[in-house]
Length: 311
Image 1 (cartoon, helix red, strand yellow):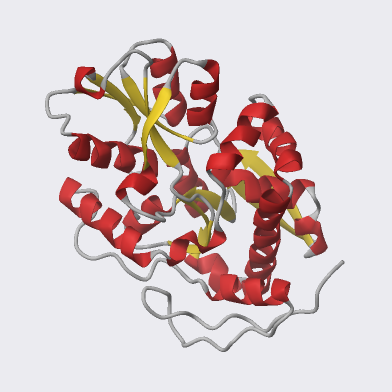
Image 2: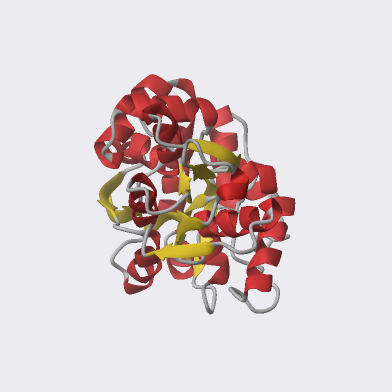
């Protein structure tokens, strides 16, 4: 068994990894995976660069904005995952204070994009150190609206304390959110392990899609809320490994990041979807097509040869 560590967060976008671990998909690839749930997304890049973990499911925007591009995206997961939630009894015109997490993630970018599209010009933005902080500020009635991911947006609606007024997809159709990530160095040094992780992850995403009731039970142990909220959220939002193929949406988000000063100049070379191509072909029982040499955006790097399936 190859021992690796994976850093996860809490949300629907993380469910493929939860399922891959709990259903034994990682072990089927000869991988002894240790899971750690990080307190907040901005801690994860340091964990990767420090070698505290080899893989993470983290916002793709943080990968694109990382100086020196030390990380590489391997497969999508989050898909149109953030939502703007408003307190009941409040109209859009009455919103004066909005809670959003620290800059750089899809919750932040969705919120700022929606604030512009809704014409909210004279509002107070309450920055919180994490998505949890924004949720607490909203639940504690310290703000009129907040940006959050699933399953929390659905949970607010079911509890009667909030209603979703817009989602990421209303701004950027098909936009990715958190994605399976490793470092460029680890991808180059251990391509067979990377291939196994991606295969297990894609199997996990298929499990969530095919068995949402069971997936909600599994996810509840990591997210910490009742499975019924997660199950309801999966009816509205599911992880999608192909989310990173939505280049038009990604380019729009990168343009907003540049306008906000989050990135300087064009961003490219931060994704390699050849492992995803091979995993999907392997799961479909067809041989993977040969890919052109180079990183995705726009070219794809050739995947390692497909190993025999493990049981």
